[in-house]
Length: 337
Picture: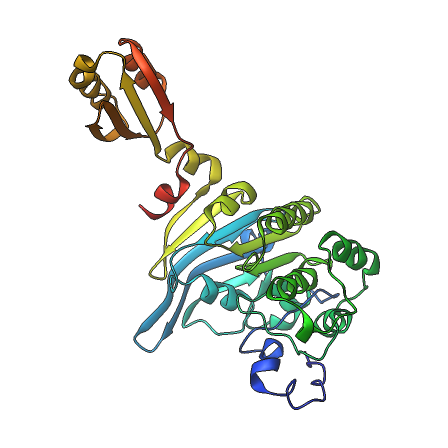
């Protein structure tokens, strides 16, 4: 697929400013019509179907033996520390880099052999967004969605209004947050079947992060599959259907959010009404399955717990209690423990 001509200025023609349009770096692509699918079975029915997908950079491992699927209408969050392989996996999906071994089918297509068709039906927001400074927002949108079969001007204007984004302003005059909003517009407005979003809320304030979640959920409800990466655990919890944890390039966990939440640890504190009951209460709590890290200090017993709360509450109810509180399940503990 030919890329659009580069913007005329020296600044816009520099490798840094135009690397977003490079096949080997951070391109933004969008959907169009395409030929016949090559995948069959699960590979054809899933939006993403990766099998034994690996990428090495010499002795450095990017991802190793990753098996992962993403269904239409599903929101899957990739989480993990910096360098865990989240961006590498995304770039393999879109054929910005080639796998060392294994394969991935996207929308029923082989991501390497049929990368043009894959990218025509996909949008991508890179983690480090760079757009030509001299383009207006409207020009940037047109530039990076040029392969779209049918422009959706109504949706573009609607999203720009919801994001409070002035498309007539030049990119170079935009704040970091507004540049990120423009990237979201480019990625979310087209009628893509797959949205690949790398750290999409970086630089956004909490209100815009909430709006982003609403828009992504709307796109998923329309049938688009969403693959996103995030370090914001609250964002993952509220937006994702499933979570895939990458650790040192390998999948350490893939599960539904609700299942992870059920396993996640809560933090609790109990203050017995009678200080003399402190040892007995601490001992009773420690005997409950799923309870750990029991300690007492200044008349308060602290603990961590997971799973069903019924037995824990029954044990505590055996004593007179002055105060009791328990926190929301800590998904970060569940992800990274």
